Each structure stands twice: as structure tokens, then as C-alpha cells.
Length: 298
Image (tube, rainbow, N blue to C red; front, side, top):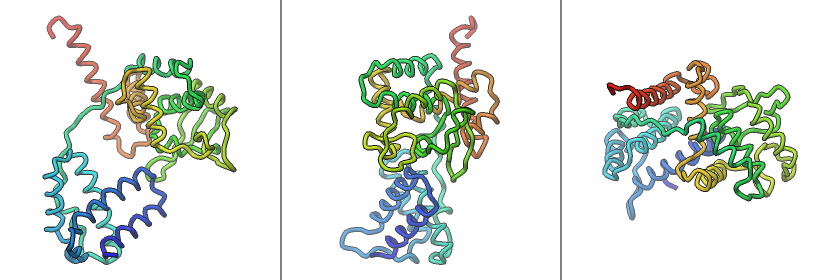
């Protein structure tokens, strides 16, 4: 096995030991294997670690630009390679993190499209009333109520275990990014939906996951994305809706109803307030739209 391939596998093994999310691990593995493919041309020897200098990194980055990839995609791939180099520096295998010496492409500042509170409630009500005939309807209703009522990331939702529920106190323990834990209040509708689901939840063995698939094993984040897309397409006519859309709606609607940014930051588990501040921009965009529609001088 080429040295670069071996070190990539060692790095991924370290990420597994650090218990990073399955989604992060898949992304890193995909991006780093693409890096390996680039530096392993057909019928040629891959470069040694010593040859992976600043010029090699710039050459790889230039190839990404020529592929017409979106800036956010290039930023993600560059972040994965920087993490790999940080590991190689720590192991004494390369003298410097050359990936940090190349410029990060600027990503355009785009605001996510957010459902109105009425649209979100109409969707959740349509799911709960059984407009779609599905065997897992009670579970799916609880999933939507938690995603919108608690603002969870999809990885956080599938990671919730029975021990994380406090239905009597109406609290939910969430394990977020960087293995950080936080407590999130459980709204009454979400708690009621969970009660109904847990009464009929069937598991395989001693599975502790709250949300399980028909075989009784832990539900995957991909399965949740498919569930959200199914209901959003059939009930709202919006196949672009995904779990994070409900998280955006949660934060935006809290802000619109008077919640302060610091509180929303805690509820969302954001490490930086600047991440939460994008919801201020969303609210300002809504305010400008109202002005444009209503003011006689607009």
C-alpha cells in the first residue's frame, strides 16, 4: 500500500476513535480518497510524503478549480486535507501543514430559504393527521416534531438514546458537534408525539436508540433525509426540503418571536455567535420584503 494511502487510513482510524459523526467521517473519507486518486495516476508511482509540498497542494487545488466545483465544495475538501496534514505534522511525517498555506476560496454568502411558521405547522399537521398511509407514521410524526420543535441536526436526532429523554421534565439531552452535550427543552407537541411513538417502538435486542428502522436498529441520517423528502414532496410539493430546513425554521421563528441570539446559540449548539447571526440577516430580509410590499415610498 502506498505511504499516502496508509496514512490516510491511519488518520481515518483516529477520527473513528475520536467518535466523530458518521456524516463527517464519510465526507473526510471521500475527499481524502479523491486526493489519493489525484496523486496516484495510472501506471505511475504515487509521490512520497516528502514530495507533498506547497507546490503539490497548489497543483491539486488548481485541479479542483478546473473541475468547476462550487466554492463551498472546494472549501470542504481543503478543510479535510488540512486536517490530514495536521495529523501528518503531529506524527512527524511532514515538516509543515502546507495545506494551510494556500488561500481558502471565498464562498458566496447565501441565505437559506426558510418556511414560514404557517407552512411548518401545516406540514406537521398534515403528517400527524395521516394524509399519507405509512406503517411508520407515528415514528415519522415524532421525527418531524423533534426536528422542528427542538432544532436538532439530523446527526443529533439519530444519536438520541432512551437515556437522553426526560419526558416528565420535558428536556432532551443532545450530543452535538465535537462531542459537546447540551440540554434542549422539549415542546408539548414533541413530547406527546414521542410518548405515542415510544408506546409502539419495537427494537432488536437491547437497542438504545430512540428512533429505529423497521428491523429494530438505529435509524441512519440518510434514512431521516429520505423520510423528510418523502413527506415534503407529497404534502408540501417541495422536494428540496431537508432536515436542516426545519432547524433553520426553528431558529428563524424563535428570533422572529423575540428570542435573543445568545439563547438561540445555546439551543442550536453553535460554538460561535457569528454562526447564529445569519438568522438576524434572514429576519432583516423578511422585514425588507414587508417594507417593499407595504410602504407607499418603497
